[in-house]
Image 1: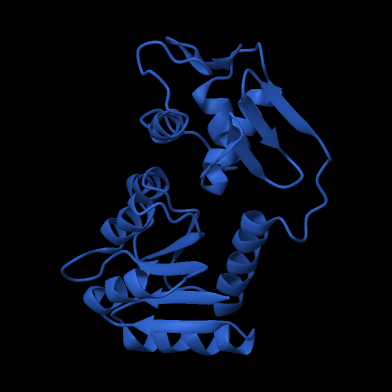
Image 2: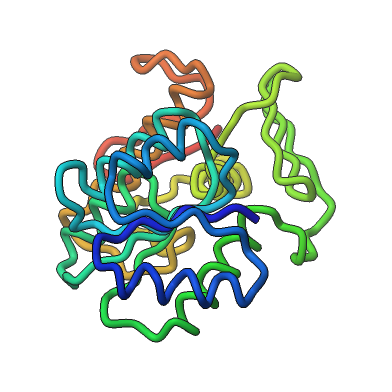
Length: 226
């Protein structure tokens, strides 16, 4: 597995590299954003660990850049802050997890393995079941979504949101329920993470924003797949 590590604190970047290499991961380590961006554009990556407080182009911007390129591999954000707004911002732009400095390197490794298992589904036994909804096909076993037999590239979070709504088909699901089921974090009132992800899913499904075919917005309540 190829992992990008970006942190301008050399001691931290070097420490993370050592622990990752001990797990036999291939590490691309950088102390500045420019070199990390070159790596993203030239290498096939499977994972990224990004420090938020990087000079010039910060970790949030690089995370967004990765997602805007259509790359769906897991991203963990490193942060010296513990404010909820930073957590929400990271999740909103497509990060899969975050870890606060100072951290135990073994915990980081555990988070990396967990996020990658979720991404690949190699080590998870999933119920063999495929959901079909008017041209939309959601394969829970292979973790693949297709629209009219064409694969839709979704991030793991986007897939889990769509799958949960499909499993609850016909029922309205609140933003709070979606967030707590998918992210397994406590929902905050000012949190627009779910709304942003729903918008991205609709874009990938080529939905008409005014008259979506699949994910309906029930104003003031939540979302529903009919």
